Image (cartoon, rainbow, N blue to C red; front, side, top):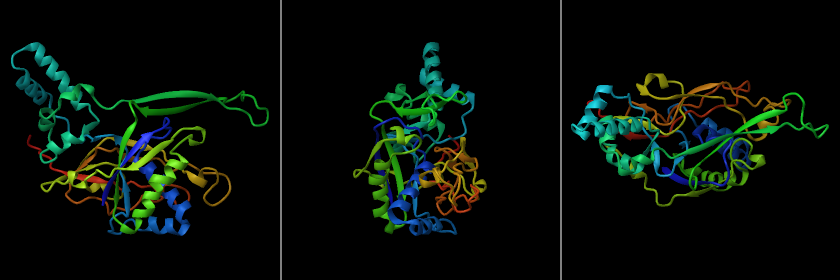
Length: 333
């Protein structure tokens, strides 16, 4: 069952609300609320042809989803479309070309536009179906780098060598409203999923530097959400709403942006090794599709397994199994 949650940022974030990071926080919530064995059973339920018990999207600006990463149209096609809109007026033609370029660079599409387009998605339909608020562009994410001093615990003064470090923090303009989609395929996990999302994560914070006030947020279930808004009976492709990487992904025809993730362990593993001793918090780098990637298939790829072997401790894994929604890609338009 697909559900939606509303997130409000109460402080800047030190870690973006990406699906794999949310999954990691969710796993620590299971560990602390239900115990080690419960978490082990949950992680063991992935793969071998079974639907993933719980999947998360990344969090998107409220009222939007990622724009599909379709192959960009030829320049001649954009020019022809602009001429059709502008007629013979040269100034109008230049304005239409700039509008088209702006739309081609968008990372998000409104849910209202998606409802109009999902049955026949193409660059022609995206350009033709743009709404009057196009000038606003994508929701704006502010980012800043803050520098701090390293204080010696022995002297209480700034360290002479390596005494400066940077923190990146960011937030969305306005009220910081975000939407998070969650697919719960195992009905026995409904209750604990809501406890983790509505209680554990708001109480403990999210991501880097939450001990110094970053990553504070509120989460509430969106009772008005109707999952049927994403139905598309004529679908021939799927839009991925999550960070994606799994064994077998290469078999799909796909279109995507890539991001290298340098995963870091959280919870108790951030301060001590999973097997005891000095902490080993870093996972191996993972190359992943960003949300908005398109794979040409009718069936959701939610039976894939978690990524294993991403850390020196074999028990540790990484979630690259995507939550996806169907649409029809019209290649001819």
